Length: 274
Image 1 (cartoon, rainbow, N blue to C red):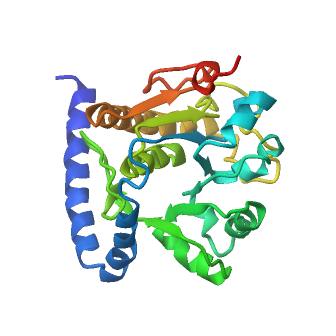
Image 2: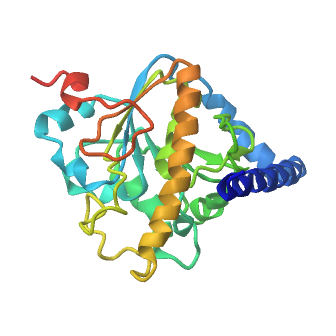
C-alpha cells in the first residue's frame, strides 16, 4: 500500500476523532447554539432564485459597464475586501461574507471593516461571519441583521450546509458563501472574481489596492499557498458533489480561473449581454 494512502487513512481517522470532540463541545455550548439557531430563519429564503458571489480576484476589474449595470439588479454576495474595489462601487451586495480571523481581532484595524461596509452600502447588507465576530460587531454599535456561523467540523467524505448547526470548515470565504447560498435555497449560483491562482502568478492578488493589507512573508509563501489551495480545492470538490446531489447549479464565470470544481460559463450568456 502506498505511503500516501496510509497517511490519508491515518489523517481521516484523526479528523473523525476531532469531529466527535467538536460535536461534544458544541452540544454543551448553549450560548453559541442559541445564537446560531437563529440562522434557521434563512433556510430556503431564496428558494429557486439565482445569485452571484463576487470574489476579490483581479479579473473582477474586467467587468464592463453593461455587466455592472445588470449585476445591480441581481442578488449579490460580497466577500472580504470587495468593498475596496472602486470598479464595483455601484453594486450593493445583499449579503456580505467576512470569515478571516483578522476581521474580529481586537488588535487589528481590519475589524473596522464591518463598520466601513455598513456605512458604504444603502441598504446595508446582511453579514455572514464567524460567531466570534459578534463581540466586534456589538462593540462597533452596528444594528443590523447578521448570520453568525459556527464551523468546527473537518470535511472528510462529505460536506453539509446547515447554518443553524456546527458546520464544516472550508478555509475559504467563497466556499463558505456557496454553502450559505445553497442553504438559502438558491438554485443557480454564479462565481465571479474567483481567479484561484495567487499561487501561480507574481501579479497582484486582488481587484483593489492591497498594499496596506497583511500578506504572508515571501519566504515560504509558495509552500503555504500550495498547501492551502490543496485543502480548499478538495473542499470545493465536496461542495460541487453536494450541489449536484441537491440539483443546485454552481457555475464559475471567472475568466481564466484555475478553480475546476464547477462547470464554467460565460458571463455574456448568463447576463444576456449583446
